[in-house]
Image 1: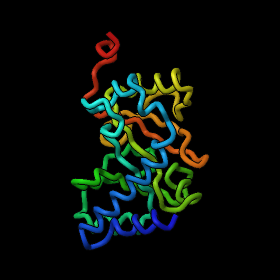
Image 2: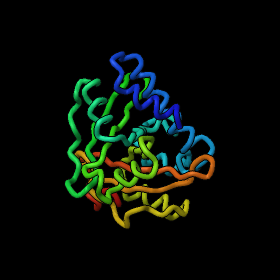
Image 3: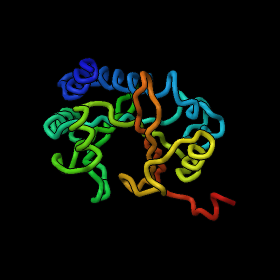
Length: 203
């Protein structure tokens, strides 16, 4: 979509106001596509118990929109935004990434492939779709229990059979869920450290 492509390029604009406006548009389009008319689980009171907000309102849940871009775009956006630190991504995973934070628009995660010619998830996305909204990260307090709920109550299949390490020592799992106009949306459930021992969580 041309609007999304323009907004991604504007993340590297010298004008901070234009960068913030672009971030707001990208987040709004991601939420509209993935949540406005689909995915009742994001509004489910039991699921909301596992989210990182005290307000049990899905629109207040902590979201980060992941934008996949080519390396050249990645570096331009990185420089334009003050060269934020790169996340520590497990070496076996196909991603280099950093977060952008905007006071009103909220955070974005900017990702590119470690190996553009390789078989990794970001490389495959870019080859198939080009630069765009690759995923939405939903922060949860217990990724195992949130994953179990989406599997058993909503019949969604996780991409990985078990939780795996994510960037910056998080724990993650992924779901490919229905989205607007018959498309799919990649959801990453993210649990930040420190982690509560399973024996305590399940007590």
